[in-house]
Length: 406
Image (cartoon, rainbow, N blue to C red; front, top):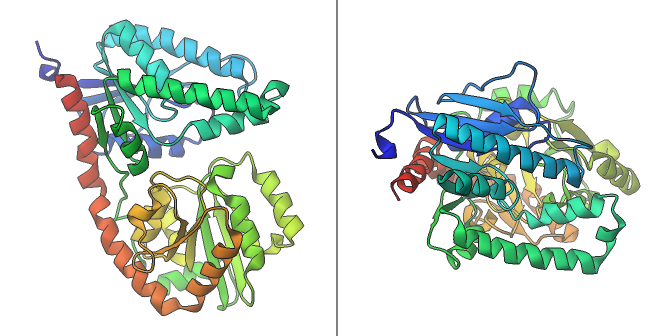
């Protein structure tokens, strides 16, 4: 009997093991499940769960299973214990629940390898999600470890070479790959035809422009004077996001009163950036907001005069789409998927990565030309409508269904 004749299509999902805000997990899961219904079921493996936690409020049925990990959570030993225990629990769960497809959310060559091993041990289909270049965070992780071996550039180069070779072999062997990154899609397409490009989506009913009176009332909660310009950064506080470049650019912006609001989920580098801000003598211009629930984010996009994303690498940015949908002018680096969404002077503004001078000049230009910025933001909002959740959400379901038929 065909798998599609079952009442449920069942997916086993390997998640990042570290503690994380439940709302952040929910947002990530929604990328996959937004258009799924009662004919689908998600089984997820996670390293840390709240006590008595069993499921999220998703469009489809779901179960969460905790996987033990040992030692210091950021150590290599801890990660390895998580991988091994994921495989053991995953194999058991697949056989007990007759799960159809094994996949992961992040880390295509780490948690993706776990998904691949489970799929081969249970003779199920393996769907690998490629969200980012995981070599970059791996190198940062190794550099930050206590092991002196990884302080050597030669060792890190060897690790990077081996990683890339493993990645090539991996993509050639998995059953299917799905990515929201146009650059990743082009790269992997050269290795295998078993790949689908599915961009991230944005809820254009939630992320939209407020009326001016409502915006003004919200702004008054952050600034007491009207001539202060609000810049907004939303993303991980990680070197990959180019935060040092943003802070250095802020130092170079002249003749303007600016307040930079920084919203983030991962904050391991916050102290480093606070020290950098102190060194640059711009601490009074920055507010480290921290995590903001997704339902509250439209307020911040609406009060901002400018959204800035100075990433070193960026495949396809959720927050960029959200800002554009809210008709907030955007400045982003000319990397990865950014130029697919932002056309210079038409839907936003582009700058080179790691170039605080160019970024500062562009910030000054956009803020000094509010009518131009407004027209550009209007066009951007229209462009982003094609990435509405209802249109994109069906694509992921189609990928899974087609995979099961193979």
